[in-house]
Length: 349
Ligand code: AMP
Ligand code: MG
Image (cartoon, rainbow, N blue to C red; front, top):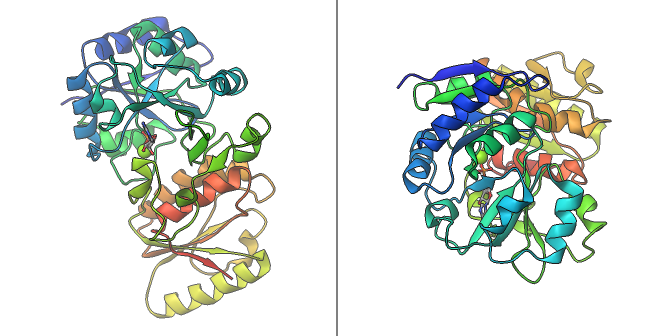
């Protein structure tokens, strides 16, 4: 299949191009599009065959449900049975934005979207191209991250091309995403609102509105006995080709330990990648060193994390050693992705 690649400037949107992409979606085809979190792989969320095509293109397990992307609150009403008050509060504060909410689904949402569950995940993305595309298609757009299943999520069109060129109908290049990590998933369908996946909207942000909100422990602990509640969280994710290790704790000790480990590994003939930060980079004199962001500005680390993992893949390193961050605010989401990317190899020193 030939994949058409089009460029759209999000500050000056060419509506003819949006219309062309929306037509494809309406015809049941697959279009990758930018959001503020990561690139999404879009298809008509009410068309089972189109959605089946999404799972195939990504190689995604069918029990891992998809998020429906909408452009108005009006659109939400036909997709869900009820909207709890707390959800209205969250929408007012965080939509459009990196917060997905889980609702009880209405009959028009196919089980193919929900992995057979009675609940559906819905979000309004904060990206003008995405919003115009959804509005123009006049449909909820199913949009998992536009990577091959298991690979790091794409934060620019080049990443999507690497993974999916030849497998989908169109890729909209809308530049770099911002947040860089997938949306926070908040279940509001039960009695206690629960974060099923940490993301750009943090537990601390939500606690201001929902004092009783809890975080699913399975998303923050790498303990085989704690099974995450969200189907997608149980899979290995964001995996680099190399083996990855993450060191957390006092940063001076972490740096020293990474230097020691690197020395030993290099003597064993291994090619070592170090995921460093602005504040620590000058300490490392061996290995392939990439700076992921600044410890003073954890949003920058979130924004660059997946891209940096892909850079190490390009350099063909055997092992990646990364500095962890404190697990609070956006750090919770960063550590969740590092936990998945490393297969749980987080060492606290
Ligand atoms: P992605 O499409 O890669 O952003 O992943 C979507 C995430 O939302 C996965 O972790 C899914 O397991 C989760 N998700 C989607 N729908 C539901 C649902 N109905 N209940 C619980 N988690 C869901
Ligand atoms: Mg994904």
